[in-house]
Amino acid sequence: MEFVRTQYATWEEPLVLESGLSLAPITLAYEVYGELNETRDNAIFVLHALSGDAHAAGRHSASDRYPGWWDGLIGPGKPLDTERFCVICSNVLGGCKGSTGPSSIDPATGRPYGARFPVVTIGDMVEAQARLLDRLEIGQLLAVVGGSMGGYQAMEWAVRYPERVRGVIPLATSSRSTAQTLAWSAIGRRAIMSDPNWRGGDYYGSHPPIHGLAVARMIGHITYLSPESLERKFGRSLQASDVFSYQLGPEFAIESYLDYQGASFNARFDANSYLYILKAIDYWDLGAAYGSLDQALARSQARWQIFSFSSDWLYPVSESELIAQSLERQGKHYEHIVIESSLGHDAFLLEEEKVGGAMSRFLTELQASA
Image (cartoon, rainbow, N blue to C red):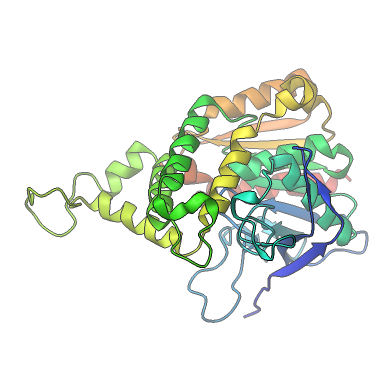
């Protein structure tokens, strides 16, 4: 078995952020699957969602319990075929999996940034990714692919760098964060920032705000599922008994499941990164940045393949329809595929067979159109 490794690219020159502040140095963690061809035109950039990272496929070692988060789609003979394509995935700026974020050391103080880290946007994340492609000497991407917040980045790439993107595949996403999205983010942030152990973001070297982050993750996780999938998997089943305890503690199976999700998330994610990435999600509004959605998408030179999922209530089908309708008005080459699924928002990660065939066809057509 061939193992993958995480690589790191660092720049000393400042990155000017959309806020007007500068950040330096910056590091991006990334992984590469497959190889660039001689003409360096077979690269696909995979962009992760809120809690994702650069490890999208394969295993780092024989002891890894699980492969990367999109392993079913990336690899030899898979839709993102590493025998044909060079697939790249990087951890976003502001993350906590090797890229510069609030847990990184502030060179001005020698301590972790914490809440002194500057707020970053989806556009800032893409600017950092563009530096990475420059470092890798990749002038143009065959495609950008991403679900949820990864879809935000994919669309930003198509509009900010239209000459560098030939294909765009956004899944389960939206052209802006709606009031509902803002509301869920606000609740998650309040949970973390109300934890006494958050300490204004300066908890490094002490007890982190594990209770606040766990609650934020529990809230967020529910939005990724669907009522149907929850009912089918848990219903009203009790976890450890056949009768009610008539106590205030958790006893339903769904409660135990959410407790597990919160605890396991604490083991792999930084609370401050969660806050900063939520803020980047909140600020996302592609149309506002360019005057309107039509004006934004008019900049794109790419072909589009949009996926939405019937039971996704976080980013419902109607949000993808707005993108498709705008592309139609601009005369762009696109297709919008609605996948019937009961798995909710997480379907973009789980419905690999339903997504994979269409994605593979699109990439083959894209490559042939060069």
